[in-house]
Length: 94
Image (cartoon, rainbow, N blue to C red):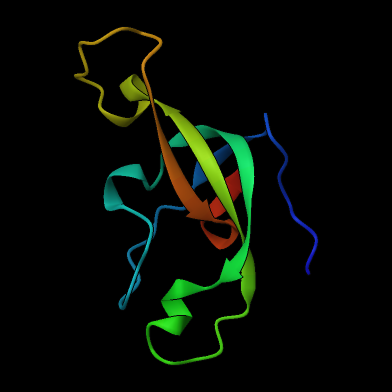
């Protein structure tokens, strides 16, 4: 098992990228800041597994985003959030 880069409470930003192929990171969350909520475990990289390649295990994190960071026109409560599970190679320190 490879060491993990992030711990709960760490601030991160999702990479802003649009590579071709099977991508598991929603486009609406790319480039957005969030906070690591938890490490979900180590799982095969689905972007590789989709093409019948090895898909070495990667850390998968649950990242919490403020709704207003994701959707600037959001009119709900300022404390509302959305959690998204994101593989480590999509995350950068904030």
